[in-house]
Length: 311
Ligand SMILES: Cc1cc2nc3c(=O)[nH]c(=O)nc-3n(C[C@H](O)[C@H](O)[C@H](O)COP(=O)(O)OP(=O)(O)OC[C@H]3O[C@@H](n4cnc5c(N)ncnc54)[C@H](O)[C@@H]3O)c2cc1C
Image (cartoon, rainbow, N blue to C red; front, side, top):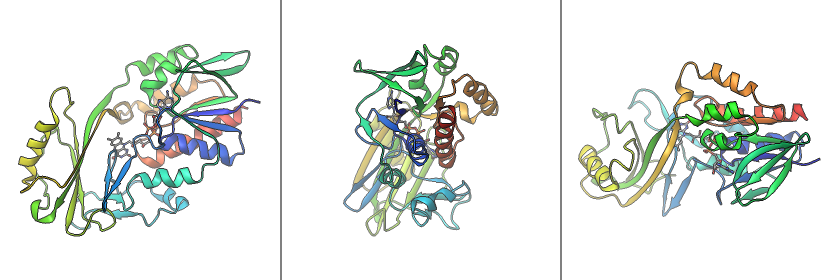
């Protein structure tokens, strides 16, 4: 019997892989990049933990799953009693979640290989890779974003593929900036331009050297309409810093936030689309599930259970 393949090694793909492993299924994970984690990435540098993707999350989300991964004490409140609408972050960086899941993974992980299409021959699925290889699969879990899944499903489920073709995303430039406290006034609630929808900051000793601030900002100007220098000059003006940041990282995500999951009609549409999939093929991840980390992890586990029940 060939293996089950999980395509994509972000949070959702890892959750699917661990559930397949728990169910005793023979499976493999394919991740096109050299590292696991997808959009969750933390850089550790001289006492700083800088997040390139998400940094802060809504406190009221479902965080029960953290205890299973030994991370229940890793989450901390960013602004106790200071700002309404609680926000939390990870002491070890958001990638701690990926590292915890990866440590439990025992199945083979194949890096630097991209799946381009999924086919079916004589009741078996086939995966075509961009380097020309073709593998047989007992089942497939696609845990890659819809913009990539669109191509994978073109022959096998054309209707699904067509519906992913118009999938829209918001662009985000993420900045992680490190300052001496004396150089950056503690940010207040400014009247924000809609292009700068989010900022969070911390001086937690696990994330920042003593007497420093880490400022994490999300900017929505597409880089083709502006430049890194222009972004920095607007931020310099709005945050009123007195000296340039000691640490500066800018990560550009041209397709960061999927927009359809925020529409009220999305769950119904997704149910119809999921119904088009054959029994041993499933989808998991941010483009097909709810908008918090727990939902994405559950979508991975549900995909594994679906494929297992179709074997
Ligand atoms: C800048 C930014 C800010 C965010 N902020 C928040 C937030 O505040 N709150 C929140 O809940 N979520 C946030 N998110 C979303 C969150 O990070 C993701 O939903 C979560 O990490 C789960 O991702 P995923 O595994 O579904 O997809 P991804 O992390 O996108 O992983 C998909 C993986 O599939 C791989 N892949 C793609 N194509 C192929 C292929 N053909 N073959 C093999 N591998 C392939 C990719 O390399 C990637 O590793 C943010 C995302 C970004 C980018």
